[in-house]
Amino acid sequence: MKIVFFGTPEFAVPSLKILLDSEHEVIAVVTQPDRQSGRGRRFHPCPVKAAAEEAGLEVLQPRRVREPEFIEQLKQLAPSVMIVVAYGQILPPEIVRMPEFGCVNVHASLLPKYRGAAPINWALIKGEEKTGVMTMLMDEGIDTGPVLLKEETKITPEDTAGSLSKRLSETGAARLIPTLKGLEKGSLKPTPQEGEPSYAPVMKKSDGLIRWSLAAEEICNFIRGMNPWPGAYSFIGEERFKILMAFPVEGEGAAGLIESVTKDELLVGTGRGRISITGIQPSGKPVMEIRAFLQGRKLVKGMRFHSDD
Image (cartoon, rainbow, N blue to C red):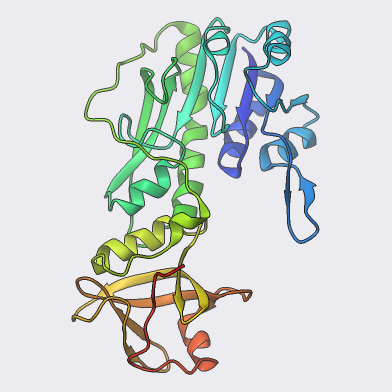
């Protein structure tokens, strides 16, 4: 098959690489425009663009995929199928209907649960015990198309959005070749989604603010779902701290109040129960294990984390 690949972040790179190692031909790669980052505000390529250029592929970066000039470019390429993995823009009907075998999307949830841009984050935040990856044929809705293949995976208590994303990116890539083979041979029949849909809207930096009135388990799930980005954070006084990992512990305490400080443990109260913070990052500093952090900090029982940004 002749493939045009749409993708932007690191999550999409394993899918691109597995296609490059297959019998199929990737004729072009579409990514989001380069963005400025870092202190120098320099433009940097996204992970998919870097991988595509390393492989010598043509890279297209339209500002908007609805631009007539870009749609005409795709028509000239005449792909037999398009693969979309965490691209970041909604494809218009003209593109979705263009290829002979359709547009195949790799989505990191068990649809119809967690349709949208951040399914991995929200599955963790909501305390799900399992998730998975589905390949689906795209239609004009947002993640509403019929399912082709799926694979489930358990969510462990140690999983963060970062670790789960890495695992699901490899799982999704492995499902791509069987999906294309089934479509090409006509042996894989699209199946309508079944169940109650839920949504996973895109994350913003401000979404990471911790609400200490939640229960201990909810806060720990929230912290895991925000790790590494956008990052769960809170304040002591005016100083901001990003909290990378925590787990619930027995006992009660007031929301946000530091209940106990030892040389290697920091216990904080919540709306119901307490948490033990194990990974933390002071503003402008590297991530620290809690023991190292407490060695350089004069935190005492009775101080309070607060959510006033």
